Image 1 (cartoon, one colour):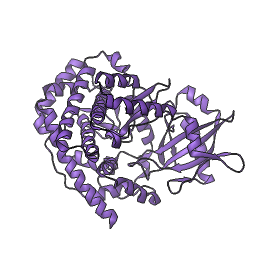
Image 2: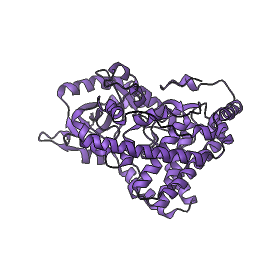
Image 3: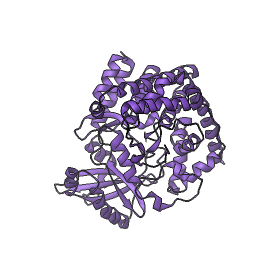
Length: 456
């Protein structure tokens, strides 16, 4: 089966029974066993040039801040270089079992958010790099991030290696568990925080219960009122407007605001009918360019302030939807903007498939040949502070991430092939740990080269 790096769902539409798919996975293992899949191949490339090929389409005045964020440590650098790892993964051996990938499943991309029913969920929450690809690519991305973030926390190599093996085992167990469920049981499987709390309680992990309780409390308080208080003020005319913090947060021109007003109509056509009707009662009153994150810092990201006909407000985030980072290869120092149209739709489609429930305001729009996806800003959203985790909490957190990754992969019809592959896999946990530590060393080398480039 040919794998294309686009979100073409037909690539995973297979006319086979689950039993046949599991057997196909076993055959894939015979073709590419564990010891072959986990051979580390050093890829010849210029890391700095690849990073520059991604940066060229970004806002130039934000690049110094982006680079500063990336150079904080090796994990931050890793977060900002998904395209570099994609390039390297293309040079590795593959299972040739395609699923819908998150594309950037590092441990910083799991977080809390609200379902349309206001249930607090914990799941993967970044799908900018989503595409059809080999399932192990997501797992590799997760494992390397566990090692790098763990090293920044001062955890020892030996302990991290054992943890990586445990995380792989957790992924395997979750694949087997979800694979044993009936189709509709899987479909309604929900990553509710209540279930996460039950996992914590079962593990008797008192060290993790407090940070979990704290982040739940914080996420539930991250409502519209808090957003308005932090990001807006009343101007001299008594109108609510965004607060500027240049160069990270700056107002756009009145001409650009008009473009957002026009695009807002198109956005409304991409959301559920009840949200569409709700948004008919709002109008855009202010727009600010507001950059966030590490990997996406420097892209075009905006906040829209909307005012309802009753005088209340709503804040939406509009993020540029670039082609997946592997689309910048072969290396080019220019971006064909026409390729970008439709990328917002790719991202929201993947998110709606891979998450059991998603932000009801999730939609997309196009402005000036650029694609954007839209979501509610910071509404009941939150994440764990990885830097403050102790060892026990970190262990449990990483295993939960592995479970959620397995659940996400099983939304793909081809996922039983993963189950069949892993049923046959020998020494898989240990061999994946070997590959992870070798690639982590490559990340450290790339970090130093990029640091030298920035400083010079």
